[in-house]
Image 1: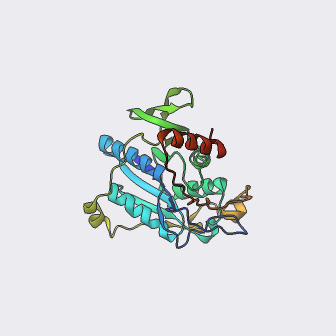
Image 2 (image 1 turned 45 degrees about the vertical axis):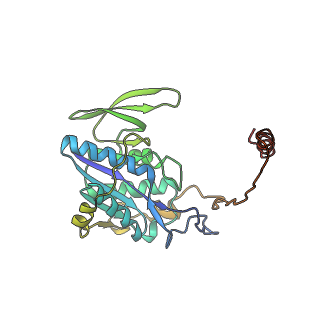
Image 3 (image 1 turned 120 degrees about the horizontal axis):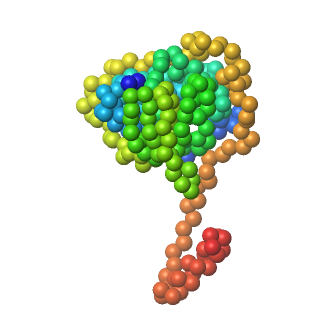
Length: 262
């Protein structure tokens, strides 16, 4: 069984800069980490690997520094990884990103199962996974809560439908986006770090793609543009109160009303 997990490097802090002209995040030189939601997809893949003796690979899209999250995936037990990286991909919206990664996946071969985290912490759209599946022409299920059964040619899952849950069976090849807490992600292994430190990471660039139409990638291939984006404001205001329990209770209630929390 061949499993592919899509992972992403995201800013590790709210202290980031935004390009005023394009509205995209400046990622170069920013402290980064693996997207937390992708850890749940990785753990799902590694557990399926243990059940079926599967091969697990990862793919990421980003600048050269994004290789760090692939190395982290190696430390967790992933077998191989690839980075889709090219200046032509910069500034992509969800549609262009989905198409770019789908082209990268085609360069890696055929997979029975593709897993994605629910969403990313920098975009929060939760659209890339399903859109990739559409470009790849495979069925997909989003918001997967549990893996109920793994068969030879299909997988049965429970998915979150907001007010209810639903059980569905989908044939391979397919794509799933998993919810957080589907499994508890494991920690990276120091032994695996040492054993995989020289493992090669495949770099896939624009020239490697079957489709070399530049209008499908980056800003040129993005039908949507960010109107406004800004880092969250930091509020360090503090107040210290003293008094009886009755006085403090009254002060807290008044403050909550003043802030329009109640």
